[in-house]
View 1 (tube, rainbow, N blue to C red):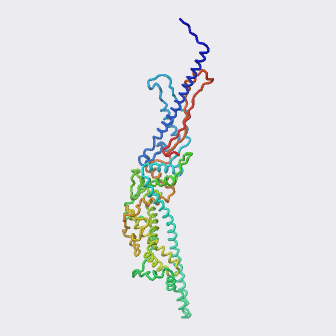
View 2 (cartoon, rainbow, N blue to C red):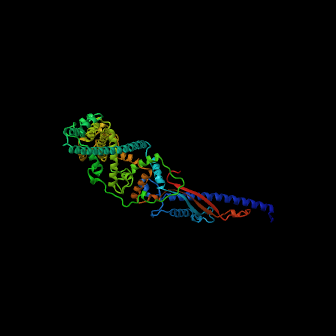
View 3 (tube, helix red, strand yellow):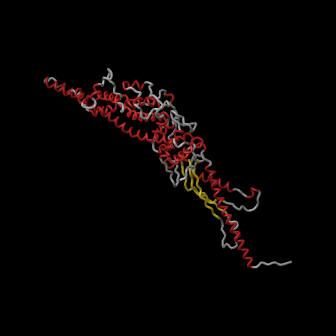
Amino acid sequence: MRKGSVTVFLSLVLVLVLSFLFSLLEGARVYCLRSRAQTVTEQCMQSLFGNYQEGLWENYHLLFLDGSWQEGEFSMNKLLSRAMEEVRQNLSYRGEDLGEKGWELVGLSLGNIEIAHYQLATDNGGQVFQSQVALQMQLEAATNVLEELLQLKEKSSEVEEQTEQKEDQWEQAWEAMDEAAEIKRQQEEGADSAGQNEGDTQGPSGDSAGAGEVDAPSGDSAGAGEVDVPSGDSAGAGETELENPMEYVKELKSSTVLGLVVPDPSQISGKAVAGGDFLENRMLNQGNWSAQTETGLLDRLWLQYYIQNYFSNFVESGEKGAKEKALDYEMEYLLAGGKDDSQNLEKVVYELLGIREVMNFLTIMQDQGKRSLALSIATATVGFTGIVPLITAVQIGVLLAWAFVESVLDIRTLLEGKRIPLLKRTDQWASDLTDCRKTVESEAKADDDGEGLTYTQYLQILLFLLSDQTINYRCMDLIEKNQQIRMDNMVQAVEGSFTYEAEPLFWNFNLLAAQGWDSFTFPVPADMTYGASD
């Protein structure tokens, strides 16, 4: 039998080879550990964000994670505890589970989880909510729908400018009426004073009386301007003098306008929401996302298209959205912000009357016959002053009053689901100045010839006048009331890190290593979002 021996050189070579092999094995194991850490992190985040608020998705096609986990109070610690549970379940695999024995080659343990940043739906004035709405609508709708909304936005700017001018003109008309009343009072006082001196001398008293009568000279003075011909016809349009409608319209504007445009008050919704915990009235939870979401005109257009489809109004119930609604007139709430349907509808109707009054005034200014008729009434009312600017101001007031009466007929038509052009032609005019009171008190309506805008489109024009934050918050108010949730609990994105630990396995067999490792540490960045990444 032969005896064998191992030389010192061969022993050293074996040590080097084995150390190299163990190093390679540990390196491969570390790579697998790091890969598993990343996989577990992704699985954990996907599992967490798979628990999105179900009602939000089903009714509004929005994806948010409820940071309160349906327990009322928002806390990121709840998310952390859920994340730890998910990670431990994913790391609980053991070789024995598959009937194997021995070491677990890629065994990991969770060291720490940190959520550095998170983003809530209400952050940045609701722009997080708006950006996700825009993203969703890009998937649902065709691009050409934005062209119509962009045109409505341009019209809203025009309406806003014209409305400011209309209010100034209405005030100037009433100032002219007040000034004329003051002149009349002074004339009457002058006439009384002249009558007291009538017994002194006959001749001078007659001259004084002639100087005190301004009616005849006012006709001459008016005749020097543009009002001479119409003033002669002030009562000549018929055998009776036309009534100035300004006083009646002023009375209408200070009354309940719903009674003017809704023939049957019983059809108005009586729904109301209790409490005042709207987003604009309470302290909101705030995220700390480092990159704030920024939205622009395109996002706003998509939001308004979303509103048109997911929220109801007096005329349309909306194609989508919650089946059970806290308020029936949701678009009206977006505009008015009140607690009950009736209050919101009344405010919106009043604003629509303002829009129609402005646009009808532009139409009536194109009709020389209507302008002459208004001038006749103005001359009959304040023509005795002989002051042309006063007569012109009252003429504008009469035209505005007539435009308001026409607006009442327009809104009646819109509330029936029909169309009214933003700017009418003169041949589409429906009201009569000879008896404005009778026109309003009757059931008269403007004609729908298939042209123009619907009630919903007029609401879109008004919505463009609101700020982004106001409309974002009010949309979320409605969602909160319908879903019984809090939108400032809804998480869209999180950013953080997971830290894993593992004990060395092959490295400790490396005989050449001066010092072994107690453990390996694997930090893995973690981020997840439902919206577009910034």
